[in-house]
Image (cartoon, rainbow, N blue to C red; front, side, top):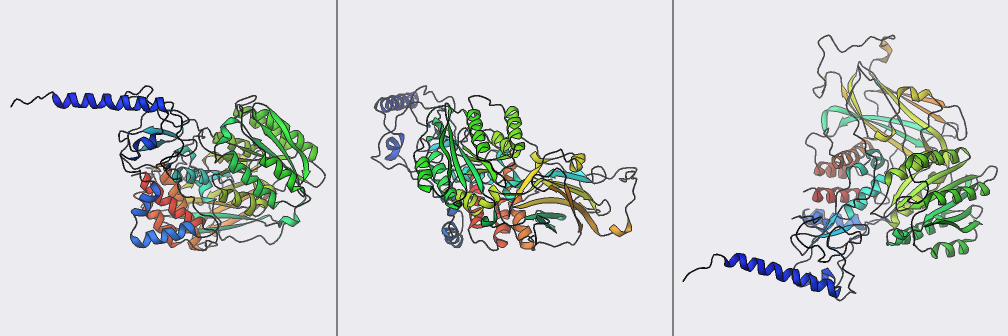
Length: 614
């Protein structure tokens, strides 16, 4: 019997034609892709399930406990749409913002992302869904319209060349929440979205508390062996702000500036924003005052200044918010600042709280002009804080710039638990400032340290001469805020030294020789700050010995685990062969007190990242 060697090819061509015809028919009938494949394939496995399966039985049980302990639970991945659910309109197969599928342009080319890895089986808001070569899975791709400031990681520096490191403090935590949203959505975050200092500062640490308002913060320092390199040391600098009870604050005037453009319709945008502001309202006192400005194609006043005691009216306005139109952010800002100026009174504090999912695409929209405008308003006495929501077109670079120039905080709200953390648990630190233009300068002793690098704070670097220049702006500290900074330092004579010794020695001429009284001193930490409204700064200094331990070692090591995690996400070259498994082990061993479950949640994120990078 003669065998037809062309038969397999003919079968393949015929099969491809049948598949194409089937997909065309599906598009014409607006059939949901999940329904089409439901009976033909197994459902996809999400990253949380894979992370749990990768653990031994004991760890899976422990993970379940971690995920459900406390008030702040990790949200479960959204379920795959059940069979029989209402079909969605299928518009296009490739690169559509709504993530729907169809046969338009079906040729096996274009923006299809081929992947063998397991992927989440649902489409999260703001993500784009693509058909992999295994048609049972929708592969999620990182949204391409989100923008982040790009900054190279701080390099290793020689003390002989640059003994002084200067930077502005940063109390923001938006990066950690954004990283969490990415990992819970089944993907690794954009590396530029990872700001290691904001991930470290997301957590509370056991720092000494100031005894009075005269000095608004206390400085603590500890030095331990670096977990990823036994031949270097990790120096932790902790600043604890003075805690002011909410009842002791002057009256607060808050203008909610809310983005109601069409892109805010997703469940994790305007609906979550409404829930968040309801939580904030519950934290305010009767004497506080609230106004609401909304902006879409144009801006308008939704609520004139109203005492917080009239909660029913304020809630009515918040609940009535709907999304439509473009994003006239500049018009919204002008309206909000006009109301804020109207509300200001002697002895009161006024702040605009901007809540948005992304860009300002109508009116004044470039970052430089907006920063100048915000700075001018800040000098008039109105601060600006920014709350980010959702995925897809979030302009993190702009939001950070606005908050920094507005003397406010930038937070990213990905869950209702995060809204509670920022707007209820930390409401005092979010709306009340105790120190302005806080700068840190560290001078390393060349007799004990040969090299150092600051972990994070790349976008907060200052010139050495800026430290004593009171005209140079820096970060602000709210009541009760904590700030953490980590340096990895290489002791003199350590085998970890990267820079080669020079032929003629490493010493540089100095006008002031090192005193014998500084023997055993590792570094000298200096902080400058201004009291709110003051023009002149004050100086606080702290010498650091090689064996300084102001902070419990477990606290420093947990901070180190978070720093290591952030550096792994950014692809750092300084971690030797350290892995996500090492991060988890270190964090688990030094988790300590965890009343709200934040540190347990961190362990889950580490496992998700470990799975996602495989």
